[in-house]
Length: 156
Image (cartoon, rainbow, N blue to C red; front, side, top):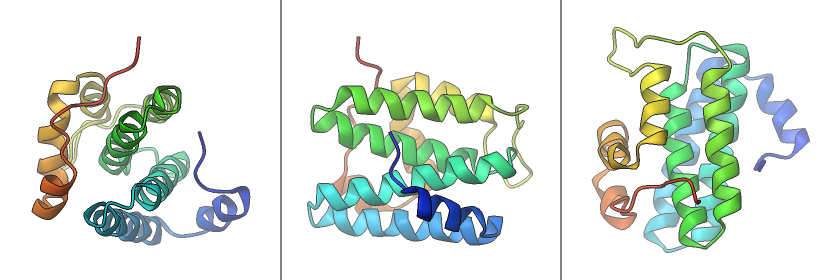
């Protein structure tokens, strides 16, 4: 499942990593606003765009944005599952894992970001997702407005 059209994908591919990261943050901040206003469609668009952007950034910088990719994947999948679109959620989950596995593992950073392997483990272990979202987003209003108490899991 793709959230960015080809034109925007090409346009955002030309941005620097710093600009991509700033745009990711802007979209996630917008997602908080949309969530607080119960605007699920716009929240999905914002988190989905952030997810696609993180995947795009990792094609050129495979040692970066694994946490951002994981956060946005968790939230996109949660939203899709909450609305009964399990196939789309699975597609996003598998896309996230594929992106994370597409490069040599990143074993964390001095700033405390987790490794790609740890991000994959979080995506595959629903019990770890609420803590991961809380730890890395640290947005109390977002956590209370958009509970991840029911973690995402692949539909069987």
